[in-house]
Length: 262
Image (cartoon, rainbow, N blue to C red):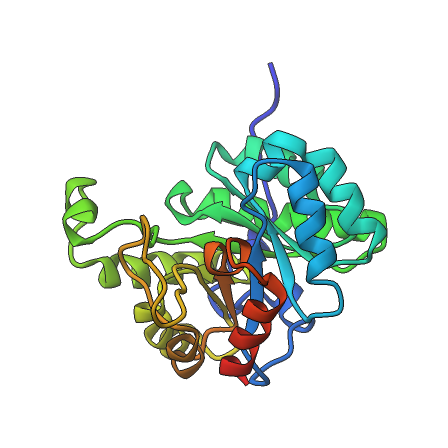
């Protein structure tokens, strides 16, 4: 039988907010753009990456890309020296998540995600594993971001899940949990960004999905905002997928969003 999983108690110190990673981020400079590679084939993904070459973006690798053509895509991103986010949304027992994070950390990974609802021990295991594996490889540790409440969920959906209070209240509770577990930050809607910065400090990273430029369709997102709204709320990163990926000129769409963020 395997021994019980344990992790360093230092990863649950309340006076530290992801300090193993925070020194790498640029504080208070600008909101950065993350482009979701939400396309069905590697050929389409490669075309998108080539189209956005030279534009200051981070790429997001989610389920569709990772499970469909992950090895080819990660190899391409690494060969180009591109920074990317692994949006893997890990949610399992601490030992399993610790092992998964160690397997995922590699050159180029700037951010990776776990679910805050996995609990404090799981979050701390993820944060510790990221630092450990990065040290073994001699690379900067990626920031572990805890997903709070999905932006596709409205208030009635959150209530149906049995979470008390409004989505915003749930998000703030989960952000505090992630902070205590020394995650680098959280994923939340723009509506909660300002409150999280106030409660957890300016250095605590806030990444906001559900971003739609003015006039764009909301799709399956419920709690959306514009890039300008995100910047005003203090978001460190925004994630944009379809408004860029499905545009006739993805590069122009990305540049327009960056202009709104500047």
